[in-house]
Image (cartoon, rainbow, N blue to C red; front, side):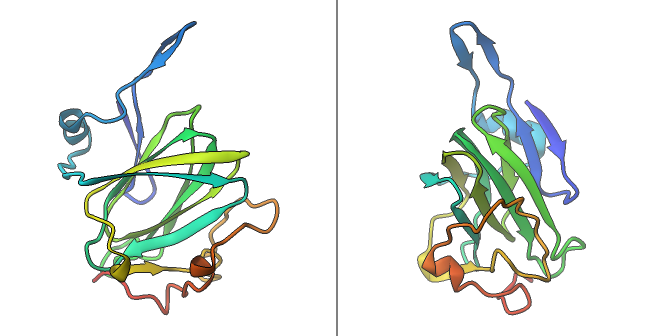
Length: 181
C-alpha cells in the first residue's frame, strides 16, 4: 500500500496494491497489521457501513461530538468528491478542508480521523460508499455543518444544485457548530 499525505497531516490517502489482468483484479481493502505499520494508526474498527446515493446527492458535513468516529472510506461503485473539515479547535489546521476524488476505478481510500466533519457529493450516475468506523453510530451525538458554509468556502465542483437531505439542510455553520477541543 502507498500512503499519500495531504495538506492536513492527519488526513491520509491510501492506495492499495492492485493485482489485475484480463480476468479482473484483486486487492486487500484492509489489513490491520499493514495499515498500522504504514500509517502509524492502530485503531480498532467496530462498524462497517455501506450506502448508495444517486448522482448529485450531497451528504454531510457529519460528525459525532461524543463517540467521535475515525473513518476509513472508499467507493466500490461510481465516483464521489469526498470532503473533510478539521473541527479540532486546538489544531493548527482548524477550519481547513481537504477534498479528494474517490472512485471504484482509482480504488483510493481516505483516512478521516476523529475530530473531522465529513461529507461527499456523487459525481457519477450513482455511487456505493463503504466505510469502517472506530466507534459506533450514535444519532444523539451526531452533528452537521452546512455544506455551503461561506466561511469554509469548500469547492464542491458542482455543476448544479445538489440533492441534500432535510436533516443536512438544517446544518449549522462552523462558527455555530459544537467543536472538538
